[in-house]
Length: 278
Ligand SMILES: C[S@@+](CC[C@H](N)C(=O)[O-])C[C@H]1O[C@@H](n2cnc3c(N)ncnc32)[C@H](O)[C@@H]1O
Image (cartoon, rainbow, N blue to C red; front, side, top):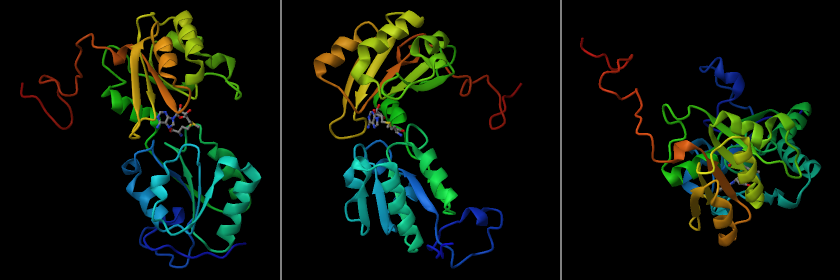
């Protein structure tokens, strides 16, 4: 087993049931931290603190903004060219030397982050893990459009998905099947096949004039936003030469109409925090 030390102010999962009992010599788990979509200010305070106190950081170099690592006094590894065995070996070795390990993933680690296999392997070695959520690029893309993805009476559902590429997608989740719900969609990892995305969504039931947008490098200084409809978006994106690091957002919620308003703030709507006088 590995010996452990405590990072000041860190809460071990075991402490969560007994907050008053400090365990001063316990080591922090390997922390999987969401880096956010790019803007270095879009990491959580907890994620920032863990980065600043890390001894070893393994970051997903293809998408994480290196600005996040500027001035950090740690041994830093870019995982872009590594296989899973190598990533695990670096993290497990560092942990066994009582060093604080952070695995930095883009956006939110739970979405297309391949964290499950890493956590499984580490936990099988007796190494505890912890996940700190992050701002997904899907949310950053919606913010760039100033969009609400859940507009009353338009849709109350958001689908996070991707088109099948080298990673297959179960047939029951193909875009044309998901289109039947007419929900808001955030489509990852698929901008290089935007034409097929549009075709499949239309053949699945979205009207050709359904609003669609592509946000490249959302929240980065070089962010680009292309808006259109399912009929027009593909050509616009191809003309702009966008091939990667882009989010596709689709759905009627991105449009102007209808002028429905949330009941939550309606003057006649009574709820726990605002009772209406009868
Ligand atoms: C491997 S997935 C990781 C997603 C990440 N976990 C998240 O929550 O954003 C990579 C895909 O996320 C999307 N993506 C990541 N960062 C982005 C950004 N800043 N702007 C737009 N899309 C982004 C792109 O679709 C890209 O192909």
